[in-house]
Picture 1: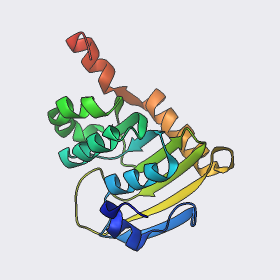
Picture 2 (picture 1 turned 180 degrees about the vertical axis):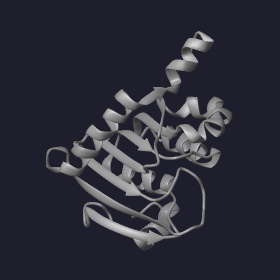
Picture 3 (picture 1 turned 120 degrees about the vertical axis):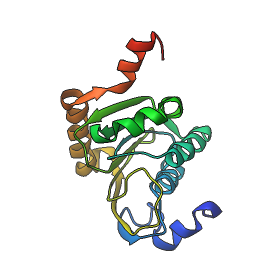
Length: 179
């Protein structure tokens, strides 16, 4: 039985086990809803998320998703242009995100790599903010070895993090002498 919180989501999407490749254009789905829905199907996972910006509402939702022990590690890449907003949210953000990076980034990608071996790639138009606008996404769910989309996107995000970003967590740690 689907989580009743995701009633709107199930009106648009089918379980990943039934339809591993899906796309939507809807004003009924938020990225946090989508993340929780994926994790409920895959089990505990490491997450990589890229976005232009983030909101307090998304961070709050992420906090409650983490309380369900569904995320083993959360890695986040945001855009330099949203730095002021990110800094204002830092006290809360740093409590729910393991590593935050800033880069020249406008992508909105969600990668979920579950301990079970299930990998889910999501390419979406939505930032990590709340809006009732129409947003689109493509969801690709497959086992790790059979998911070339996940492998490609993961390698590109890894390159973005390692070679083109500033590690915000590390900078704060150096400035404050701790986490």
